[in-house]
Length: 289
Image 1: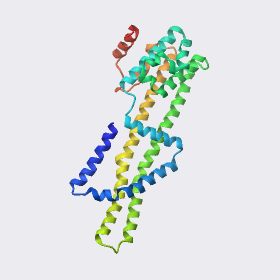
Image 2 (image 1 turned 45 degrees about the vertical axis):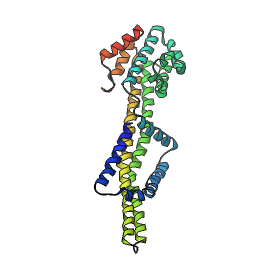
Image 3 (image 1 turned 90 degrees about the horizontal axis):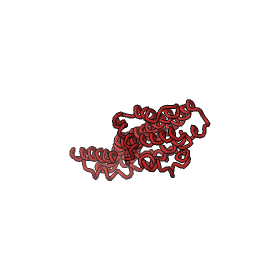
Image 4 (image 1 turned 90 degrees about the vertical axis):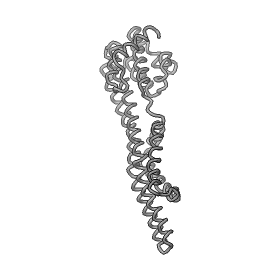
């Protein structure tokens, strides 16, 4: 929603200022469709040339996510800390084998279903289960787990950055495509140089609209969208790192409350509950509330 508000603000301020200075929107609208076809169509074609299909799909998903907003709010982190604490407590009391039913079939886990903010995040559930499975199976030692999770998070970071990089490069190219549209407009103008002054002026205005649209799309929309996608990708990575820190701490022998505290301390101040709030959450869990 905040992205839509930002887009509307850009449009109202830019075109509103143009009208207040005496400009007529009809001049822009007249050349708008053709110029958008040249600029947006050319940029989209360049995007296809530079990107593998997976990156294009991830970019579309990323743009849609910016419209919804970052999913990792304070409530999501509270649910995450609760589910980790309950899971670790179960493993400490009944042995790691007790976690098998939750890790192997997370969709049927009654524990996960208690926390919809967590269970609805498919990637987070897969990462948590994938982190615990080698420990439950006894395939690796606890001190080797960090290497596995670091490798996975590093690859996630690469995949998050790829669509942002493509969108940023496309935004950087938009003024260039605006110049292409302007040059084509000048070519048309020169072909009509012997015509009436009004017609020549109309063609020159259409050419300048191309330059205007290229710059506006680059700095008013595409660049900010790429930055927003980068923030959302960072937020998802931070969420994943919190899971990794807690699991590594628990696998290394920390008590459940200490392992969760390790993850809490790594959170941003925006999402990090205080020690007292964390203690109250755990007390509520023990009392069954």
